[in-house]
Length: 259
Image (cartoon, rainbow, N blue to C red; front, side, top):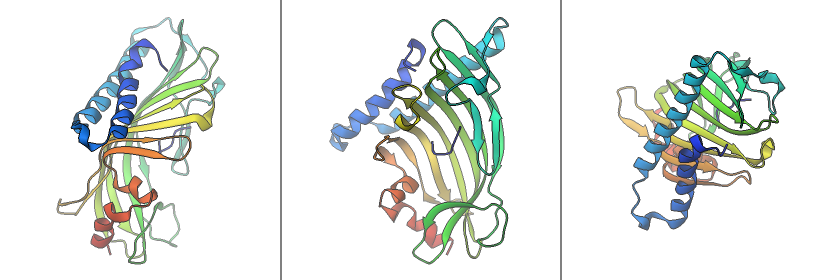
């Protein structure tokens, strides 16, 4: 199953190295002098290259040994309840070392823009503003995804591009701000197939908000890693994630704008 939040083989070592390097640099602290913007840009670039290579194999090889996406652990499904899914991946195939599954670019609508208590399917971010309302969202979300499994069908890693835009709005009066994101989610499972072992690393902009006239209110950028034990580490700014880990300062300007 795919969700918004959020294989060690030769072609994929570069991106996994970046994830591990980001963690090591975080431990080293800001005095290391590392340019974290370049780290996340390299992460996005390498992740997109992995997805592009998998799409090219799927398009150029007619003799692939196909695999049923529903036969894997977990099944290769796109799902974001209640707005869409489950949708099987477009193609899965097996080679001598792994199983690869791909889901081509799809665009979905998430949230219906309704106010609290008005029915429909509003998207509640879970952010409660001090002014007495919540932040809801409505956006268009485009995904392209590649998953890798062991030959026995246990999930090892996933690379998902997300591109979206829409609005963040006051759950009581509907006042809105602009929302954008453009990021890469990388998930790894160790041991393979144990879903509770998932580590998620996000590269790029996963939640940036601006006034309707364009002035930034909250800007997300960098690298954020979420570990199976519920902890996280980050480089750069990740305002909505920081909110859920106890720091509301990054979302405060958004709350103030849509009050």
